[in-house]
Image 1 (spheres, helix red, strand yellow):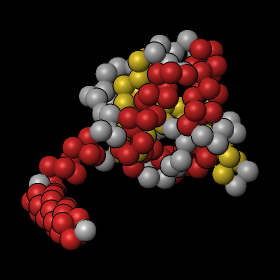
Image 2: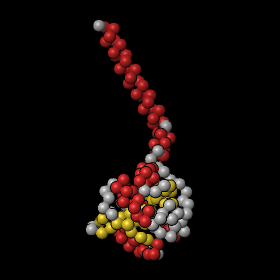
Image 3: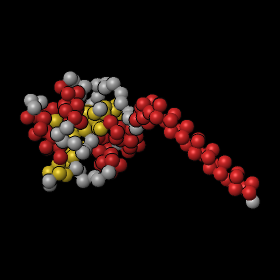
Image 4: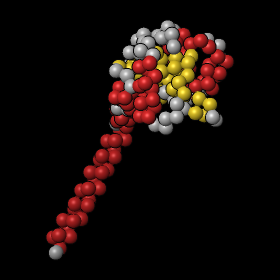
Length: 169
């Protein structure tokens, strides 16, 4: 019985030491570890000319819509389409357009696709029909950095073949 007790205590001490070493190593390499972890959720590519710049719902006055407007002004596409769930009983893209035109961006660059999707998958399914109606083959997808990899995957599965992804960092 005594040997079991000693073994148990040695195992506990060994486990605590291993956890301590793991903690120290994690602390020392925290920047590399966090950078790697972040890179697994971010999907960002250099923009290429596309049929459409698509801004996913969820932001109508921040960096996401400004980035899309800048890409449009720089000529990556003639159309920036706001995927627009409702906000205060209006498509949120209406608010984005008001925000951007107030900053001097041209109104004719923007269009709104209103829908009632409540998830990225539902949004992609709703967009699939709209993108097909517009004969869109190539999309620049603009979304938040932390959402980019998942959004690109969902869009590839449900809506478009090859979206380029632009994220707001």
